[in-house]
Length: 384
Image: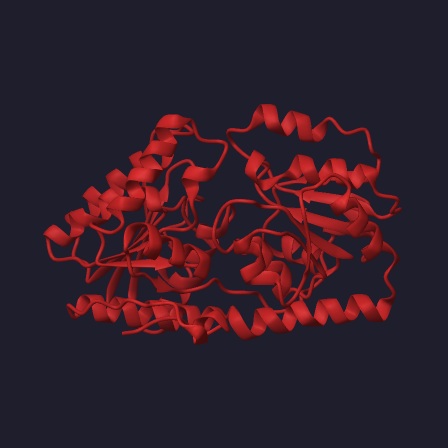
């Protein structure tokens, strides 16, 4: 098949979950004999014309918090209309409206809606209204909607009457080679807690920093992440005077995997979204997991981690508990997380499911899924 992938910043991945998803899926689809084209934003592109066998098309955009995604996807969709393709994958629910245009010229579309973006505190009223409208458009515009969380799948079914196909995310292998990153940051293996996310309000970096300040641990806290449009919030996060807190900025590739594989524990604090890639990746690396207790996070980590609430002092207490836990106890938690990730989040299986959907869509058949008991237990949740 000739498959196009739109709505992301581009690949190779060095930004977020959608970019990692695109690289992993594109590379595996190419290995299976498909021709894959990935649309990349000019300010993100590395200059390469190919990544893991996928062809890269670089197009401009209007950089800005409220324009970057929409303008680039608009131009990418116009470009796609002039090129032959058998199917297209759109990422991000905000791009729902664009997923209808290729269908006019006979190109079936699949839309991965991600989480409930309209709930993010970073958006103004207009952006939240657009995301709310896009939720409705998702039931009208694409051939198939994909949700990466059973919680989000249930939301679309109950609120919009929209059947969707559940396909999760993929986890990396547990073993990871060492790099020089720990030495650069001044931390020792097992000597730090790790937080990874864009430093935006709904990801609660400030909560994690303040709770860590209240803790008694001698270990450090390494915060990995940045954000292009959250300067005032980042200043608040970085205002700490606690010498135990280390700001690593954005970290990708081997160094990122090294930080995950050798932390004492991983602290996950997002409150909005579906399946968060960083949480799945941390579990795959065998991290002991502390996660903010939300339905989406619990869906992923309840059987492989320990929950905490946003109540003052709760996370600090959990950090102290993890700090004083014995080696055997920590290893049991790491093993539980790794086994959970291996059993439920496999890139090969994720690719299988997307391939089935794309083939069915190209053949004119609608592939959708419903939530059943098997899915809640970790099944794939797809019907083709």
